[in-house]
Every structure is written in structure tokens, then in C-alpha cells.
Image 1 (cartoon, helix red, strand yellow):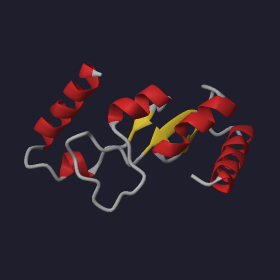
Image 2 (tube, rainbow, N blue to C red):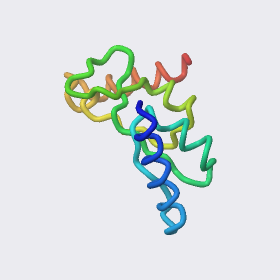
Image 3 (cartoon, helix red, strand yellow):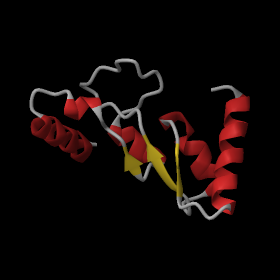
Length: 102
């Protein structure tokens, strides 16, 4: 990720914190920089989460659930791998198993 992107992400995250916002939404690639520079007092919501068995579709900046949690994500947004699955319940349980195995 270009340095300018990191600078902008940090600028916006700091503004959010100063404004009293409880959290931010960011790509998986930005979790670590937010945690490093701002700490744990800001919630981090992360879309673009794809289990190891799911296809990326149109998402370019993806990460597995376990890696996103390791990097410091508080909430994961996992849409298509669950709702587009033949059995959303089985897909959800498969994700939980993947997380428990990590």
C-alpha cells in the first residue's frame, strides 16, 4: 500500500477518534497501522474478509478471518461467502471451525 494511503488512513482514523467516534471501517491491510498508531481504544470493523476456501470475487484487498483477528480487527464483515453459499449455516460453521483451528 502506498505511503500516501497509510497517511490518509491514519489522518482519518485520528480525526474519527478526536470527534468521539467509537470506531472505523477499514480494509484488512490497514488494521495494523491503525492499531500501531492509535491503539485499541478505537474499534476496527473490517470488510473484505474471505475464508481460505472462498473466492475473492471483485474484492482485491481481502484477508482470512483468522489473520484479520490476529492483526487486531474487532469486527469482521463476511458477506458473500455466507449468503451466497448453498447452505449459509454450513458456511458460517465452516468459518467458525477455521477460526478455532487457528
